[in-house]
Length: 235
Image (cartoon, rainbow, N blue to C red; front, top):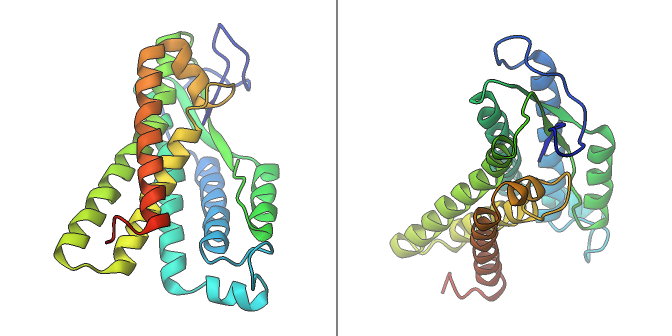
């Protein structure tokens, strides 16, 4: 997700570039906190330790924080969230404007609460952009995040197929499919065409590209979900 205030719409106010693009200590701190919280969120969800799950107790939390679950959660948060936000940042900086990630304390607390209950509503923060004033710049910058997700989803899906063909290791294939689904779903969700989500900016820039990107996301999301739910992919 990317925030800012272009000339044709209202978003979070940010300052235009006054120095060369860079990464500040504040951004690194915000990104590290948000990433850490999301890893905990994902670990609880993937481990089935939420209160809505059977056995979602202290014992369930202990089982959830097993090494494999934490590893998958860490990779999911890194590729699905950190890479998504950094794609926004780099796309904006290539256009010579200021861009940095800022966490949302309320969003992080909300994500922990929902994960503990048994579902995840994550709004950990966003990349704040200043200086862009045209639809094309905003559209391309917004699309960079979901495109990163779909790239990782495709890579994990190919990895799952290769692993299935070479070794038929169900645990590894399952983990790769989980990573495929998370990236595909996160990218697709961010293409919903409502402000301040990325999809609104992409659709205003180019409806055809928005529709194509959304279609790719939907296909990847449905395929990976059905593979996980039915076991058809892992055979």
